[in-house]
Length: 155
Image (cartoon, rainbow, N blue to C red; front, side, top):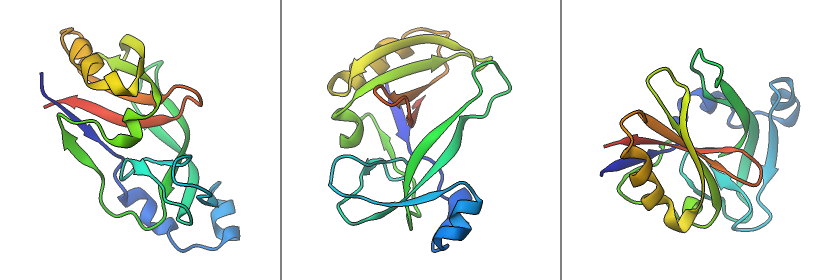
């Protein structure tokens, strides 16, 4: 079964790019500089930030639905990112190298299924989840911290 993994739309965040620390703080945002190439998973481009890149740490509503599962959490976005990752039938490396919580949502935006999965097997888990007719779309979260990682839709 075909699937599409997408990063977050950068448009709501571009007004934050280049703000000073005080201006960011007023908006509840912190600028962080990546200390290494693996510890900062970026949510727009769906890649690990590279050492020295500036990231914005902020709260993002990844499940805006009017349901009991409405949810937000802290995420990293690369300051300056302008194009969201969108790939079909492949798993970005940033997801493949981490333990994930895969949450499948139904037409009411309620969780219909959820599994923990090693990112190396994410494509197989997506296929199994989308084999359930009740699952309309899915969210991947990084299991250790619980942070939203990406949206997954049927292609």
